Image (cartoon, rainbow, N blue to C red; front, side, top):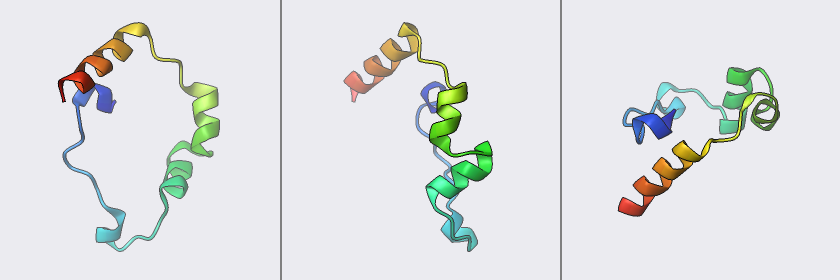
Length: 61
């Protein structure tokens, strides 16, 4: 998703809201399972077009 939108500009900081949670715990709550497990089950490999677009953007920086 960030690949399509560039960098996220409005990041929500849990600490600013008084919430103490690790990144891994947040991902588990969001995905309903550990993130690595979710990626294995549901995330398809990137096709050549998005990979090329990402590499082109990185080369411009």
